[in-house]
Length: 558
Ligand code: DQQ
Image 1 (tube, rainbow, N blue to C red):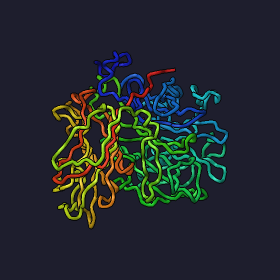
Image 2: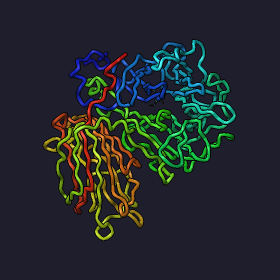
Image 3: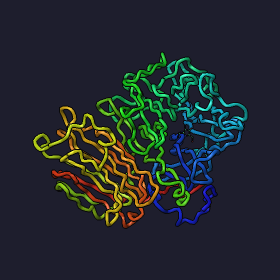
């Protein structure tokens, strides 16, 4: 297969390898960021960064467009935006949708202009409107013939000015929007604030950025939205009163994957000041949506069900050659409802309830002992395509644990599956996408360590043995699970879909998304186990597992 060839017409069987069955993907070729999710006249709309010609990022990224009535099954529509004008001829990059008070949507997106040399090209903000607002599918969009609505100001780098957020309305009747940028002199990442008095048609820069990052990093795909102090309900992006706090999320690009980090704070609409509870540090101290592969996410307010939902891009971690062989690259994590944890200190995330409609064959048991150094198979479901909820209970921790102090241990060691750190509890958890001979297996595990005066739970995923294929990136993902194991059980939900495992710890307090490319553990040959490599036994107080049906993901096109 030619490396840069057009793989649109690959026979179906070549497209099947490791392909997911209920995660959002275009039919073939490349996807990266989710763009402008919105609910409009009975349909959920999802746009995405797309190269329709090959399973790799290219210089002519377009906006793919799909619609759904449940965010589980999707119908592919014609692309919404393709490069066509001098201001976006070199790509239509990320952006967001805003629903105006009269119910009409507008989209702001990033155009890459027509300069010959790559380094001379500017990133600009383009306003697009639907051609026919009576069409619930919003099939056609109009972009202006002439000018974009924003161009990079002098003090920021012209190639670092992108990804407009959803706009919000202030009490003064002005719209506000944020653009991620990088200052020319200081190289600091900034979220620039703009105001509009005419429903997003013209914009004026506010003198102060809403956020200045401590890091010399471009802030990609900024997201800014209110969350209620109590309860799971979401609110419209323009809501600001005593019952909400604000979340500011930025995507930090890194060599390996990238990180979606956020801060929670207080936003004053009158002064346009956002005061975060903590600073973004660009270190492992930052709050993260997901400790695995998850990037460039974007949330929206679902007015049909009063909830805030987040979509994020999950990259391929196999080789470019593999992507060409598969004929596709890139998918989106399941849509996640987000709300503020009762502690007020972090967000909670959980797959939207509609995902449960895909659950079919079910197995369940309670109070089963998982002895130290033991494992057993969970049979009766399709292990390659499954939803598993399990709760672990640890007997009297204080008396039994002979657990090392972790104070001076580096994260890479701490979160490593292979390093038991002298724990007696753990690693225990699930072995997903395991082959018969266990030469392939992905462990989603917990281990308990002593930290300070208490105990901490490490939640991790071990990709090391996930695939016998060559050239697959395998890195340890891990985090501290936000539970006190002396008082709470340890719960885990894993959604396993052929080449992706999304793991939600403690009801969604911590999430890790992993990519795996089994060679043997595929289809019916894939197996699922509960395991305990620690020396002490743990109890599985409950386990429920379901086979998952296929969703209709872009297999029908209009
Ligand atoms: N992807 C887009 C940019 C954005 C980046 C280009 C983040 O607009 O900053 O495809 O993944």
